[in-house]
Amino acid sequence: MEMVVFTSKDCVPCQKLKPIAEQLAKENQIKLRYVDRENERPEFHKYGIYSVPSIILFKSGVPMQTIIGLANKLTIDSKIKKLKEE
Image 1: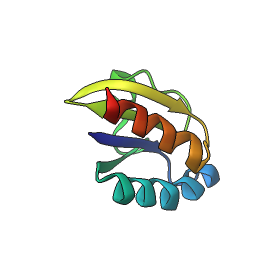
Image 2 (image 1 turned 30 degrees about the vertical axis):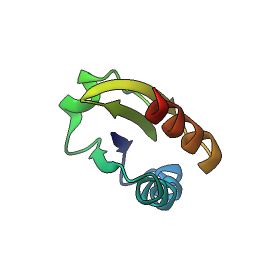
Image 3 (image 1 turned 90 degrees about the horizontal axis):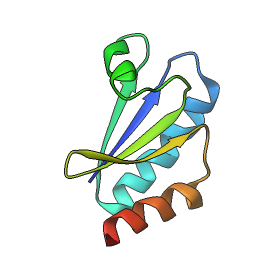
Image 4 (image 1 turned 90 degrees about the vertical axis):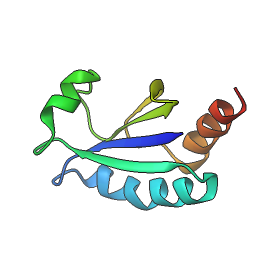
């Protein structure tokens, strides 16, 4: 399973999400990757991401869940756990 965080350098909520994402990735033993709007714009278009921060949770390489905006740790964690159970 992989969590991909779509972010931007000038985005304050993105910076607040970073430690939450890192902690959840470690706790749930999943991969974590950041995609920066300024440097990786094609990937934003590929997944239809227009707002930052956004998270896509992938399972076996397939996008399964999208979270738009600054979500709290409990919300993200519950979505990760639900996907891991499926």
